[in-house]
Picture 1 (cartoon, rainbow, N blue to C red):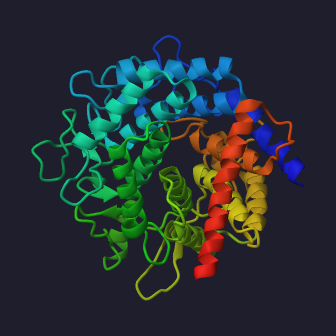
Picture 2 (picture 1 turned 120 degrees about the vertical axis):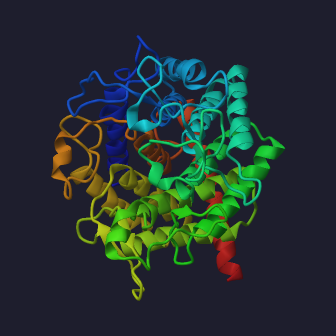
Length: 461
C-alpha cells in the first residue's frame, strides 16, 4: 500500500501538476507568469499579475528544482519570475511590492488595488525570494529578500500592539476607514482589522528566510509571530479567530442578526483549512528557531487538527468543509459552507500524514488514507490534469472551471505532495537524486524532533 500511494503521489505531482503548468505559464514576452488559464490549458487575453501568485511560482519552481534534481528545468523558471519581481513588482520609488500590475507591469484597475500594497502579498514575495536564495545562494537574491523584510518591518509592523497592518498605501502608510486615503479595493470590508491570514503567511515567510539568514532581529520577529498566533489568535476551542481590532480584540458577529452574520461571514467563521495549515506552519517556525521541548506549540497544533477532524470532516465521503460557525448557546460548530476548496484538501494531506508520524498510535494515518481517496475521486482532474478548484462532490461545475487565477496556482498542492512523497519514502527508495534525499532527511529529522517532543509531553502530563 505505501509503495502504491507513493507512485500515485509522484504521478499527481509530476504528470498532473508540474508538466502541465511549466513552462506553459512562463510569460516570455512580458516577464513573470501568466495568471489566468482555462480548464483546457489555454491562455485567455486577460492576464493581470498579482504579487501572491507570481511569488508562489518562484517558490514552487525553486523547491521543485531542489526536490527533483531537475535544476536545468526549474531554476530558469524561478529566475525568470525573480527578475519580474525585482524589476517590475517592486516599487523602485517607495519600496515594497505592489499588490497587482497589468501583464506588462503597469498599473492595473483589477479589484481596485491600483498602486496599493498588502502585508500578505509582501509576505509571499519574501517567501519566494528565500526559497530561491536557498537554492542558488545568490547574494543579490538575499539582498532583495532583506530589503523586502526591512520594508515590511518599517511600514507594516505595529509598534504599539504588535503584529502587522495589512492595508498600505503606495508610500507604505497603513490606512483604515478613518484615513484621508480612500480605497476602492475589493477587500475593503477588511479595512482597519488585523488578520490571521497575513499573520500566518508572514510566519511562513519569516521561517523560510530565517533558515537561510539567521539574523537576530528576524529571529525576534519570528518568535513574536509564533507566540502571537499560538497564544492570541487560536481560540481555546482550537480554531483560528480570523480578524481582530488593532488591539487584538477578536471581531465577532455572534450577537448580530442572521443577515448581518451572513454579510460578514468572511470576517467571522471557522476556516478548517487555515487551522491545520497553521498547525503545520507553527511547527515549522518553532523547529527553525531551534526551540527545545516546545510542547506548548505542539499541543496547540494538535488541538487545531483535532478540532478540524471533529467539526469539519465529512464522514463517509471524506474531505473537509470550508466553513463553520459557533452560534450562541451551541457547544458544537455548525457547518455553514459545505464546499470543499482545493487548497484546504491539499493542506489536509500534509497535516494528517505529518501528525500520523508524530503520533504513530493515532488515527491520523487512517484519515490521511481516506483524504487521499477523496482527493483522487473528487478533486484531481484525471482527464485534463491538475486539481479542480474544489471538490466536485459539492461543486460539479468546477469540472469546467479555470485551472489558474490570481489565487490558484501550484503552491499548496506542490508543497503537500512533495512532503507526502518525502514522508512515505525511505532511504532505499529510488525516487530522485541527492536533492530529494536531502529533503527526505530534513523532513525525517523534523518528524523525529516533534515525535520526541510528543513523548516528552506525555511523560510530563
